[in-house]
Amino acid sequence: MKPWDRSPHRRRYLGAAFAAIGLVASLLVAGPAAATPDPGDAPRSERVTKGQAADTRAAIENGEIPGVDEIVHSDNISHLTNIPKQDLKGTNSDLAFQGHYAFAGNYDGFVIYDISRPKTPKIVSQVLCPGAQNDVSVSGDLLFLSTDSSRNDNSCTSTTQPATEKSSWEGMKVFDISDKRNPKYVAAVETSCGSHTHTLVPERRDVYIYVSSYAPSETFPDCRPPHDGISVIKVPRRAPEKAAVVDFPVLFPDGGNPGGPTNPGVSQTTGCHDLTTFPDLELAAGACMGDGILLDIADPAKPRVIDRVEDNVNFAFWHSATFNERGTKVVFTDELGGGGAATCNDRIGPDRGADGIYDITGKGDKRKLVFRGYYKIPRHQADTENCVAHNGSLIPAKGRDIMVQAWYQGGVSVWDFTDSSRPQEIGYFERGPLSADTLVGGGAWSAYYYNGYIYSNDIAKGLDVLKIDDKRTDSARKVRLPELNVQTQPDYR
Image 1 (cartoon, one colour):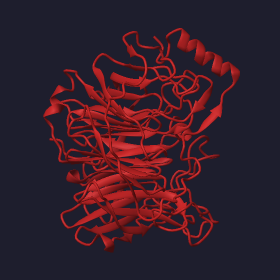
Image 2 (cartoon, rainbow, N blue to C red):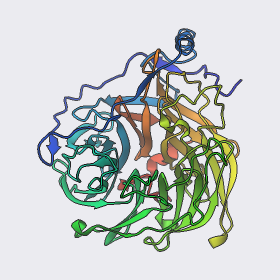
Image 3 (cartoon, helix red, strand yellow):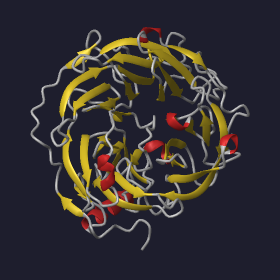
Image 4 (cartoon, rainbow, N blue to C red):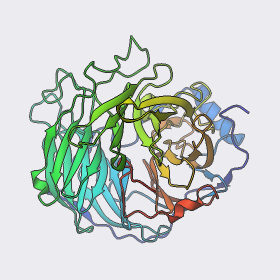
């Protein structure tokens, strides 16, 4: 069987099973509701060739892939509900969790859901605050929001403005969420090249934020090369309005991976895309465009690189990182095509646009990242479906390394990497293509396990809630967390 052959054991049902939720949402705005979304905030679309469209239609007719918008899943996955987008119509992005709440980023702001009853989530509030990507995380009474879109100011009524203008603003926003129905915008910190993503290192009195950004230019006054590190912000919990950048550690003193033409098809390292911290182990893993790194964060204000790896054969863009439960492995993702291309097909193959699994060997400053294998979903996707490895989290199953992960229109995959060199999918959920004739950007942006359920923020369709029933993951149901930011990895043990 070829790696992209369709599993014969799919359970199908037509359409999205929307629950009758009767939500009453309030749109919260810090000023007049006159914000202008960024260009590209809606899912992108582009024509494919007549041959590609014909192949997609034939694959649907032959049952090789689901029909347009048709939902399919493995027998061990249940689709409990979907909450469509309401007032915020932009691209859905990342997720965070606290108690019985889920916080969902959207390029137009963020949404807070009450998930005390996972089968029937309810929208508590929606905050209009445009500024892609609006990567979101929470700690105590504070919510943090990334802005990687050049704006005319730092308000929630800002409009787009070229990064070539000195007055333009990008960076981190801080909200007080002590009242979930009425979040309050309390602070803003401008950072070099904005904040594409961010990662927390929470302490009792302060929250440290590692801000990842990239793509500098000599024409950008606040984002000039070299941009070879990350911004570190310190936020006092009792006085978040005093949040400020405290350092910019250089992670690549030699400039990092030069990319093409030295390494054709590989991104030049001009910053980091995402970091994941493991505070209890004083470790972090960084996905930095052309490089993967392991960091010591014993001093959270001054992270330092322990080891660095490159894959100039199969990795195009190091996108994100996930530790296993014991902190002895790191799964790095390659976002080949930037999330907007069809890469889950025979032409691309099983080793590109995939996960790379690395074991951590040695001790202390002699620790090394050692490559063991690749994982990519084994289900064929059409040329009209953007599909590539994206955001996921551990399912804290006892004695096993299991992860749930979003693959855009490849859906949600649950996979086991206990044997680092022989990973395998054990469950999945996906929809058919958004279109059989056009490549329309969509699908699952993030898919995370939290307190017994899987939550997926679909770019176009809204929030999906899934449940897995499998003896390999049943032990995870006993693990209950008061808070989860996936990029700040908890010690599940």
